Amino acid sequence: KQEVTQIPAALSVPEGENLVLNCSFTDSAIYNLQWFRQDPGKGLTSLLLIQSSQREQTSGRLNASLDKSSGRSTLYIAASQPGDSATYLCAVRTGANNLFFGTGTRLTVIP
Amino acid sequence: EAGVAQSPRYKIIEKRQSVAFWCNPISGHATLYWYQQILGQGPKLLIQFQNNGVVDDSQLPKDRFSAERLKGVDSTLKIQPAKLEDSAVYLCASSTPLAGDYNEQFFGPGTRLTVL
View 1: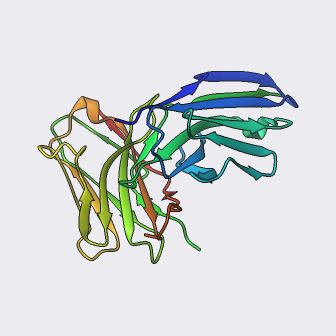
View 2: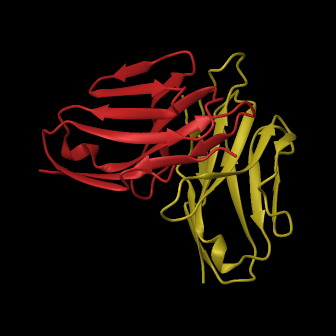
């Protein structure tokens, strides 16, 4: 069974710092990997989707990488801002079109 | 383009009561998902529909949970009777069944259920 782990569980950084969030998964037979943002009391907003054939995706200050063979992904956030404070979830999609989610990293960017 | 709509946004009930949640997916999205997200955990898939048929309900506690999507558009998730451990956010998502490995799911705002 696919298991997704995110480290660290919580992270606090001063504004302007670059940071990396980590995601690992046990079964490398995935179709794609998505990074989501979740604000308190809100649903999930998709940030980046990396297909299994890709190594990375970029959107603005966000860059996500995927190493399928080692079961790892990272989300890099450049020049962090207080508005980036949220919980970040990664999820891998298997052949059954299920999304298996990690438990998330709660990010706080301190002004 | 309107997003995934869910109602109600919040619900508080006592244990052993019944509750129902409603979801309207993005127009044209044939696939609909219900997820349960317990506090501090990632969402867990409960059931997946393709049009009005069930694709996967292997993690749905069928003794108390039921879901339907009769006309292949909006969907209802019901819990009867509710237990304390059902307190969670219930998320609805939808996607288009595109060929290949690209199939992004779009999520609604969720319904936060508190069982007392």
